[in-house]
Structure formats: C-alpha cells, structure tokens
Length: 355
Ligand code: EPU
Image (cartoon, rainbow, N blue to C red; front, side):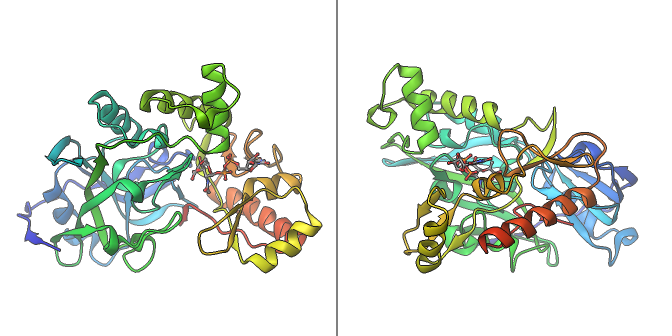
C-alpha cells in the first residue's frame, strides 16, 4: 500500500438542493442537500472538508446504476467525474491499463478492444462507471472483474490520504468487496488498473453466450468455436440488449437480487421438489441458484405494483415504468422476497445499495 497526500483547494463548489434524477438509473426524482462535481482528485477533499457539510452523511455516485434512492439525501453527494485512460505498463505477459473512476465502463471496454487489448469483452454493456466496477465486482457471461483486476487508487476521506489497494486488499467475492463492507463510506475510488493477459483465450462457455455465438456462426455448438474478442463483445451486447432494459428507456439497476448460494444438502432436497430448478455448482461444493428463475416461477415476471414492476424478459430486474419512488420499488422487492421464501425457503438478498 503506497500513500501520498493531496493539495486541497480552499473552497469547494457545492451545489445546494441538487436533483439526482439524472444521476441514478432508476430515474428516482430525489434531491441532495449538497452535491459536488469531482473532476479532479483535489476537489474531493475540499468538498468533504467544507464547513457547510461538517458531520453530514456522504454518498459517492458514479453512474448511479447500482443504487436505490428512497428519498432526499440529507448530506453531501460526490459526483465522481474523473476521466482518462492509458496503458501504464506492459511486460511480456500482460498490459496494465488504468482508467479514471468516472470513465463509462462500456466505453472503456470498447476502447481496450479497439486498442487490441482483449480480456474485458464478456463485461460489455454493463451500465455504470469504472470506479463502481470493483465495489460490487461486476460480472457477466462467465467473467468477473476481479479476474482482470490489478489494483486501484482510492482516497480515504477521513485522512485525505491516497492509497493503492491490490486484489487481496479488496477482498472480492460474488457481487461483493471490501467496499461493500468494512470500507463502506470510507473511501472514494479514483482510478482502477486492469491486467489484461497477452495470452488471451475466449471465454465462451456461458450457455446463453455460447448459443448466441453459435447462431451467429451458423453452427450448432458455440463452445467448440474459437470466437474473436470482438465476436464475444458483439454477442454479449446482443444478448444483453435482448433481455435487459436500457436504463435510458426504462429505469432499472440491473439485477435487483443476488443469486443465492445454498449448501448441497438443501439443494438436493429442493431439487427433488423442483426438478427444473436452474443451478450452478460452486467450487466449494455449494450451489448457486438462478434467482430470476425462482422469481419467475412465483409468477412475478412482468407483474407490477403501481409504477414499480418486474421486467418482462428477466425477472431478476425491477423497473420503474415512470414515476415510481424508491420506496415503491422496495415494497415490490419485499413482496417478491416473501413469495420466494415461502415457496422455496430461500432468502433473496438485494444487490444494489439501498439508501
Ligand atoms: N431465468 C428464468 N426466468 C427469468 C430470468 C432467468 O427462468 O426471468 C433463468 C434463465 O433461463 C437462465 C437462468 O435463470 O437459465 C439465469 O439467467 P441469466 O442467464 O439471465 O442470468 P442471471 O443469473 O439471471 C446473472 C447476473 C447478471 C448477468 C447474467 C449473465 C447476478 C445477480 N446477475 O443473471 O448480472 O448479466 O448473470 O452473466 O449475478 C447485474 O448484476 O446487474 C446483471 C445483470
């Protein structure tokens, strides 16, 4: 862990009574008591040390794609808009690519491919920013971000110190990291460095991706193909567009629940009752269940409670059909959790941060 101190400007440009509607992908119309646009690292400390916000809670927002805002925020919202991306280092085995926290994730992935550095293509089209990616260790179509992670730079708000954290320090898990636990509210991630191995191999085993690749190549078995990184990128984009709503058209935060992981004995009992249950064996012997399937089976797909609804093509995604509040989405989530618990005895855990 390396440390350095920042020079803090004397005055922060705080905006009072600032609307967050454009800063959360659910499109909830709530206000921040204060907000500050962070385009340079030094602005961070000026903002949090401003006497007007002393003692107030803080919230860091990148793309706002993994948060449920249930009301006005009586505190300081830091809108991270740091930009820039570059290859910091290259050795025989890999490229090390750094991107500032405010870079839009998908644009960054597209850029690495355009620069002939494959490795992130399975994570195409995930909404949000680079700085948010490590917090929940984004993952999709057979790849998790932690597999391409080298290190990140963050500012510890209490001390103003910049720290560099490696993968071990970040304690990545399935949709989880240090920043969702002990590190919560303490750090602002300012940049992330990825390690993209030069010995690239396609990762095309995820059933839906394999099917899409095979269909595109006019073959029966996608897994036997040797698709290019660009072909995987294109296929992932197509699969996501087909079933996941575009937040610009229909407010949502991606998967609303984590896929629950249960022990083998419980799974066997469940499987006897529900032979079609969709599951994935884990390395530790436990079994991950497809929460979307559980919710679908309870009849929730496409159903609504007011303007809060379950998406028609993927039951794991809750949407704002227009004018819903965060509280209404949470009420819908609770109704779903209750039904899934009653029918399957499985507790669903919300995936986005609920405030
Ligand atoms: N399924 C249903 N009905 C549904 C939804 C899913 O039966 O309404 C079944 C599908 O047929 C499939 C299985 O459940 O057999 C899994 O569905 P899918 O492939 O869509 O993936 P998921 O497990 O529902 C996870 C991630 C997604 C990621 C996809 C692809 C989580 C919480 N979600 O969803 O991530 O894109 O896998 O890798 O792990 C996100 O985190 O925001 C997100 C979208």
